[in-house]
Structure formats: structure tokens, C-alpha cells
Image 1 (cartoon, rainbow, N blue to C red):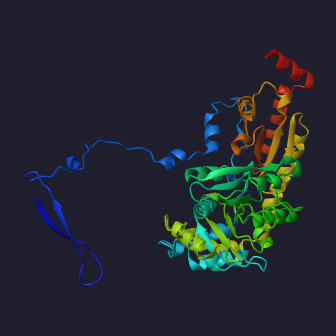
Image 2 (cartoon, rainbow, N blue to C red):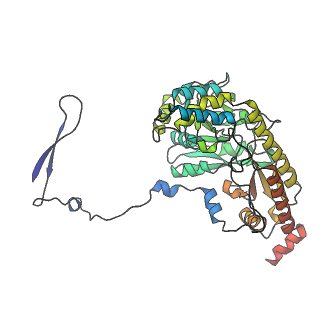
Image 3 (cartoon, helix red, strand yellow):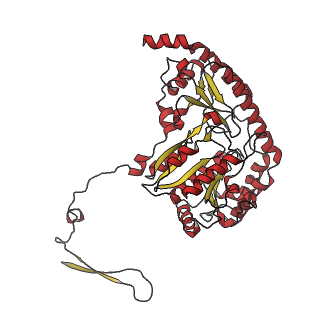
Length: 455
């Protein structure tokens, strides 16, 4: 038996000593044998990685279909406004980043929650009497997606549940399931411009409900909630004592005949974590700049949620410092006409698309009021040769080279989503092809019944 003294670093003049006894076999030790195991390779993917599942990728990757080689592909599927080059960001935005880069002052690490001056800039931009904000209420993140991830991670434990819209952005479920959090889906109502079914929502709440996710304006629906509807949502959250995670990445991206109301401006008691960022309104999704705004007028979150967000933010040490350095200028010096022009293009595309698709037998589009999308119902009884929306959109690709996301991706079968950020001529061409496709496959009531009998 050999004995060793190991000194361990510690405070004061007398660091602790550990007296360790190791039994050796001659001059060598076999740690593997000592532990009772034979060393072998056993590398496995983590449980968290196995639980991580993106339904959009799973469905799209399973669509083994080639577009029609005689027709150029038109993709109406990707929610990236930069893809076609028709919606560039403003020159003031790019100048701000160039000057920060040239200054050489933002090449190092920033605090994990962001530079204080940048947090102050975000707070000043969104501060209002109805929902006051200070720098301490702002956490800067690597895009809005990380903001949502941090908000979920600080509010919910494994085994708890969250309430998520259906149809809704698939990332909520992807993140929650990877963390061991149950997802409960509450319904949106297409006949009411995608308002929440409030009775259904409230029926889902139980003692394990950690938060309610409210996405307004909506992806995938392009809907915008009215002030009165938001107040009813807040009333449910208040009665049930459930905090809100507000996904407001499309905030202010509403059409002229509509008004956007940040949900925190209507609440006096419900604590809210509002997630936003530069991606959509400033048309720079690749810059990965997001934020969490902490609205806690009654001190219900208290220090615990704030401290939790701070600790969670330290896992990756914050978002890009170059963009942080330009943030104040981007927020406060981007000219108003830039926002107006972007929305004018989106509104024009939305109107064209809605009018064209409304005229097609078998399709029922729901008019959008903001964001970058609209949803279209497929009256499947008139397309009996297709089993579901996935088959419908697959054949639309193979026959017409038009790619729309089947709404099964958003937990809402027999619809598809159209992205309205593409150039006008592509919107018109895509709608013309969709019409040709539907006319080819549409069956009236009698025809559809005959086809069913033949199956």
C-alpha cells in the first residue's frame, strides 16, 4: 500500500491536504481493473440530442420529389426575406455595421447579457409609459431563437408543460421536447382570422403549466391580434397565474389597416418575457441579434428569473459584438420610410396572392394582416387523389415547380403556408401555376364521390 499527500488549492495560508492511499501491483497501477471495468469505446448521442426533433426538417426531408425540369423552381417556403434580393436592408443599417467593424473597438468579449450601452439603446427604443423598460430589463441574445430558448429554459423544468399555438412556429416544440418539457397545443381559429380559442386554451392549464406562448404577429398565419383579443388572453393568464412568453419578432410588421399592440403594454399584473430581434423588421436574419424584454410590473418574476437569465446567458457569452456596437444607430437612425416601403411591398404581395388564390376552386386562403405569410386551406374533399397536405404540396412541386410548406409542419393538416416576400412577378407566376394545378386535379362533389367509390 502506497500513501500520497495531495495539496489542494484553497483560501488562507493552510490549504487542505488529502491523504490518499492507493494499492499498487508492483510498480504499476491498472486503473481499469481497479474500477472493475474493461476499457472500451462506448460513445453515444446524448438523450437531449435524441429528443431534439424539428418537424419542418423531418417533413421536408422526407419529400423525395423532383421539380418539373421544364419550369423554373419558385420557392414560397422559406421565411428568409433576403433570399431573392428584392428586400435589402437599409443603407444606414449596413453603414452602422461597417463603421463599427472599421473602428476595431468591438472585437473582444462582451458581457454575456450584452453591452450596457446596447441594452440601454434597446430599452430606450421600446420603453413607453404603459410598459416601462430600463437597461436591466434587457437581455441581448443570439437571435430571437436563442431568446425563446433562454425564456423557456428559465421558466420551465423537465416534466412541466407549456401552452403553444396550433398552427404555430415549430421551434417552440423542438426546444421544449429537447428540454423534457411537455407541449400542449391550443387552437387558433381560421374563421376568426386565427384568434385563439380561449376556452380551449384555458382548459389546458394545470398545476404543471409553466408558461403560455403568444406569437403576435403570427408565423405561420400572418394574423395580428386586436387589442380586445389580447386583453382576453391576458385575462386567462391572470386568472390562471401563468406567465407569458411573447414571441414578437414580427412586432410592428403589420399592414396599414391594422395596429400592432405589444402585449406588455396592456398588462398590469401578468409577467411577460417578450422575445424580439433585428431579423425580420430590419431584414437581417443572418446577423443573429435578438433580445428578451422583461416586463414584471408586480415583481412576480423577482430576482430569481433575472438571475436565471443571467446564468443561462453565460453559456455562450452573448451575441455578435460587431452588431451590438451598431445596435443603437440601427434602432434610432433607420429612416421611417424604410419600414414603410417594406410593409408596402408585403401588403401588395399579400393582396395579390390572396385575390389570386381566392379565385381557385378548392382553396380557401385566410387574409393576412401582417408578418410575411398567409395560410391556405385545401378543401381535401375536392382533391380526393391526395391523402393529405403533404401529398398535395409534393405533387405541386413535381408538376408545377412551386414549393409551399405543408401546414402539417405547423401541426395543422390540410393547409399550406405561402411566404409573401418574393418578388411580385414570382408571386403572380406561382399563383398561376397553383391555379393550373388545382384545375387539373379538382373534383366536384360528384366526381370526388365517384373517385372514392373506385378506391
